[in-house]
Image (cartoon, rainbow, N blue to C red; front, side, top):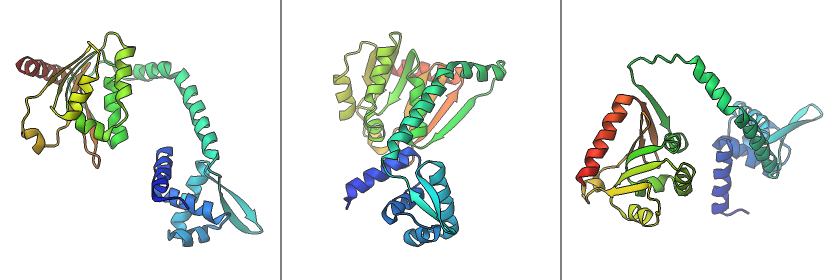
Amino acid sequence: MADLKTDKLVKSYLLDFGLTENEIEVYIALLKMGPSTVMNIARKTGIKRSTCHNYVEELIAKGMASQTHYGERRLVIAEQPEKLKFLVEQRKWEVSKLEKNMIEIINGINSMIPSNKEKGVSVKYYSGEREAFYVYQLSMKSDEVYSFSDLERYYSVYPGTMDLWVKALENNKKRVVWEILVDNEEGRKVVANSNYERYKVKFFPKQKTFELINFADYFVFDNMVGIVQLDRDSTVGVLIDSPIISSSLKLLHKVVWDLI
């Protein structure tokens, strides 16, 4: 029997793989039951038969289940866990195929967009940890970044991502980052372990104010402003594309930088 830690790890991986919680429940039930009818799966899981049928169809489409017939009865069969390796390799091949023509396709799509932008402001929202991280990833490609950050909150939401920031500096020799950080233990530790001249840091004066608010990350790069609400339960990213707003916040950053 799998322990609770293993059970949680398996479910977390399958969620990352692209299954929903209900699909995972149906898949695990199928593994335990063996070839089964939709009715029996519904009884086992407590999911309505019509809804269970939809989850089964999704599992088949995602390669995690198959079907056969025994007489007139339709039986659903869970694919063995080893097939995950094949499916992941298949996805890697599909992604590599897409990457080959990515730049050409992006340029082609951009050519379809009118170049004479109005004076309006483009604002995009990204809900959830994964989606919001895209805003950070965009900033990693920039030559200059000006940010107000709380690394303690950042790494509580995105642990294990430090290498991505290091690679962004190492891969782009023109890249310079100016960070004004909330003064806490995590921020001090990151700065102490950093040996990059192009990573420049100052700390906000220690204030109890920062203990009373949920500090969000603000960062300026190119003509954009990224804002990420760092909360494990409700992470949200906002991307503002505006030369005027970005230059204004960049100026504010420089003023604060000179004051502290």
